[in-house]
Length: 395
Image (cartoon, one colour):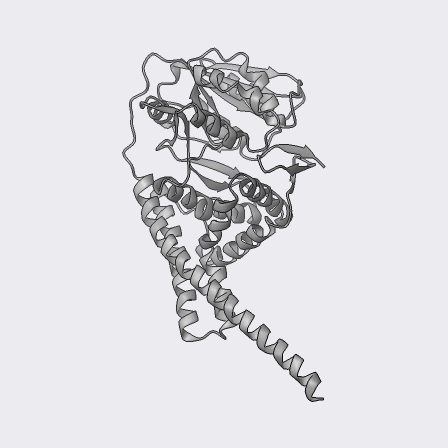
């Protein structure tokens, strides 16, 4: 009996030591996360309130490239925002679809009628050049883009009238090769779209800005990819990225290899979130989490500190909600709420429901952990395996 009891006691002691160790690690990471969140709050407020230029780049033509796929929620509002640009007389809007029966065609035709003096072109071309169908679309529609500056922007992006002025001004700075824009989430439907938008506004946006301010990130995002024609030609054109899932990241990296910088414009744009179910939200966020993990595994692993509330909750549960553990949990909740307040204030509108933020962070933490459990993703109804360099392989 004594021999049986001894191994059992040893296992219980080992489990207790392991749980205590996990508790200390979680609490320590949560404490670092609180400091990170407080710093992010200051960075967001400072960055989003930078002085914004009101002077357009004189004498240069600009082509805005918009690959479209279906009449997604908010599409008309987003596309129309590109028609209402200050200094837009030198702008050529080029939209592209693969299918003449695509629902987005009617939206473009209606806007073309509403703005008869705007240079608008609709390219309908079913040619597929690689695994990335969006880039295939971009290759097709960019053939008619005869402009000095090309601005590629996803269909779910909305902008304000100063957007083009601010982007072209940023691109005119010496040594800059590509310009992108930070973005916040704008819900287009029910609860899950609002939930998704909170993740964009209160998790993704502060992380991007903090990474840029600290010199740890050089983003290039689908919200905006603005570059000069000669720069695009030097990196092999859009067709060079036909098999890459993270085409925006790859374009930025290619430009930096030329010795040119990628930079954030002071323009902050909106990203339409139209997720209708939890599964749709999870699938979308997991796809990007696994893509980021493949491109920057160390940075992705380090982003665990951006989830102080779930970490603090784990520590508090292990330590039976002792006063020190509860203090860390309270600090985590307070810091995340403060960050949401600062983001809302900088953008100038309420972007989410603050009391839902702890639950939103729990879901984000679950997506983060799930990103390490494989490399397969779902994209537009098909399954792919994401290679470490960001290429797509059909499953």
